[in-house]
Image (cartoon, rainbow, N blue to C red; front, side, top):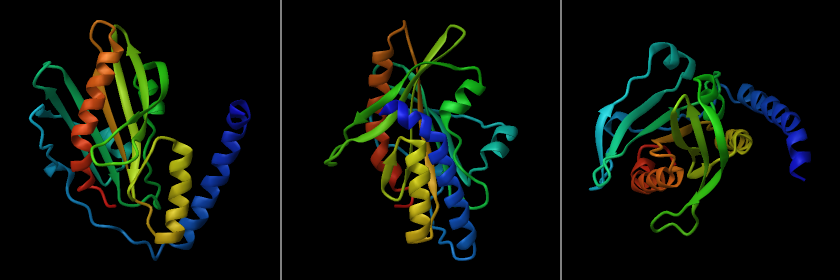
Length: 218
């Protein structure tokens, strides 16, 4: 079954993209653009994770990304001293060619080679169902990192790029909205211990997930 899906995936994506283009054209004058808080004001009410610096997106990358708002910030675990990064790209609309760039395509382009790929579930306080996110282990030279990322919008967390595209079409039809966000966490690996890096990244996600919801339209 998995093999069949892989063979059919390009065809499915093509159909979805054509449907998306048709929907965007049909509703180009009637789209609802939700309001969103500036990501620069985002804070994590945590005693464990402390912001240490704002990271800078170079102008060329910013133009390629073409997001309406971004956050790229380094945080430090006060107990272990480990530093990781949080990246958020918010797109108020995808109808003018703006769309998130998948980290699984961008990371290899930046010289990072994936050695592990899969999904993990992360439970959240007061939430009945855990969120499902992508987990990658990537390497460049002697450096190794664990990357967690997902797409978020309209109260959903989506790991699959294909599923995210499908929901974009459906929500454009139902709500005349195409806003979405890409969230990515990168944690460096020490001494080859990818499990420790993953545990740190998961702990961080649990700390910022609920506060971040206040900055992304539901």
